[in-house]
Length: 288
Image (tube, rainbow, N blue to C red; front, side, top):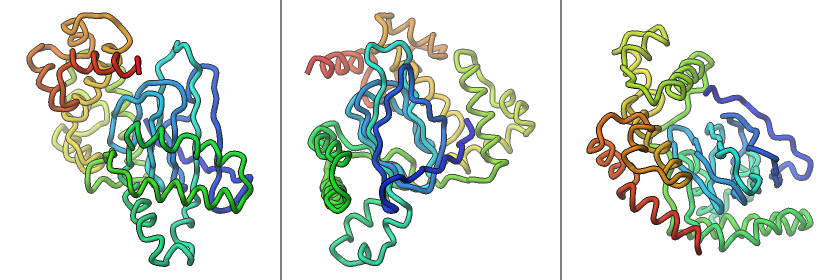
């Protein structure tokens, strides 16, 4: 997936913009980046979220802060009962650098925006606490809207329930050549993840030697190709766990793993629980 530059039109303030997105079938934005910081609140839908070198499942009340020029995409699962929708706040890249933002009163907010270059996923309790205030941004007058936004950002600086999405040191390489190579690697994984993928095969697909491709992928994504591939497979397994009643052994093979014990080890490593617990925790969360 090649991240596409997508400028954000501003029809309200030159500092920030708020918008509601509602689609009939799916979120329509491709893997893309823009200079604005982006705070995204998923109101309805679930699927897979890509931010930089992170791949995670997402559900309703997913709240994420994405830094400037950090590639991202929310790809929802099709055929859901509720149409996908999200509330998004775009902060102009100059928002952080305004003179008034340099005062000590805004130290914590500047720090938050700096950390968002790794992508920050906030916990559901944090999201629910701020949900009403995020909706208020749509209707307030300009000055009240700015004050409300600063209040939301300040609340996020106090949050204890969050995690970073990208590996420490991840930095998107925005050259056309590197993006095209990573794009081809993504497409190859999407088409062949259920098969056994050899490093030599995908390297040849990109017209590289195995050694060069391995070093290239690790340099750009800050994660090895094998680790990335296993994360991709595990997130597809998670989708099957929550969307189907298939046996875990079936899901293992359908996700591209050839060994059930290895599948269990990778699932535990990446999701910090066993597949059966993941399914049970999801079912319990849906009943709340």
